[in-house]
Length: 411
Image 1 (cartoon, rainbow, N blue to C red):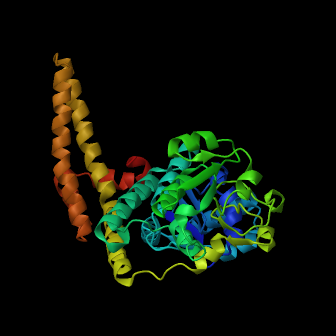
Image 2: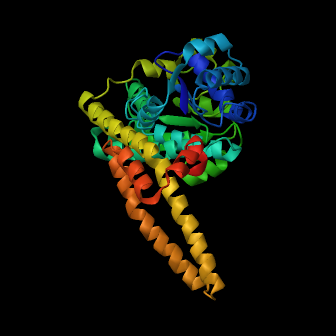
């Protein structure tokens, strides 16, 4: 069974989300290794949401949810009761619908934002790296990526430039007379920083420099044709706008050496700028919480179109899942016969060419029934295919044997 625990900008404080973003992703390994009921876990933690996607045995959802709250709260320094109150739990088909909506940007602060689909993809890659994903979660996340691409190409939400970065620059534009004459300092060198460079240049910024708390400024500067800074304090003093998007607390009052008029935009999570900076003379601070308050109302028609596509994709995923054990049973039946025939052919002197031909024939034979099975499932007729297998190939016993381990069988 699929399970999702979610807390987001709509019902959770940014302080809590900040703590979760710091500790939760790396806690997935201990969640899976230390639990008898969590088979796989993918953690998505961004600036405005925390999501834990799990594969668990049926009827163990409550135990898995409790274990997840316990592990994530300890890893993030969050009070377990506060996290328990913050999360909403989805199970089964609702998980599919939710992730497809998240990955398509429909649950974001800026509806249809560009970055979220990449964040979803990277969360799966992280789970692979630390060994916490599962075959069912792989299928779910891969389909989510395909769905988000479809939403982007087939609806008005696919317009370029939807992101928190661009929203923050729109808000900042009311304070900036001419972006081409503005000195901008970027603090951070990750993927978000690269996105910010593009957004700034689209605004006409020409005087752009970068500082890296981790010492990567030179390489980033060479790649993106900006100026590398060695001293954060000096770089801030020389800048009109400072934008932070790093993993560190980079700016506190000690590095502000003059009090001239300056706008600081904090896009980091965890927070990159000490809130005390906002009280310094001449400093205006835009942080994620402030930016989110100004998020535009979603375009209703585009969002409705996107949700229709997502609903269709989620229904298709569920239908495919319902018939997948039957396809596995058919493949197992055919491959057992194939192995016997290959062994028989080998005993008569056949070589590799014969084996290759037989395997190709088996693949061709299986393709048509597999496609037809999914068509029937999406039409609500999965049982027609299952009953047909029983009638023609007598594989119902094999099908039932596969059902408890669907995830393993379809890996």
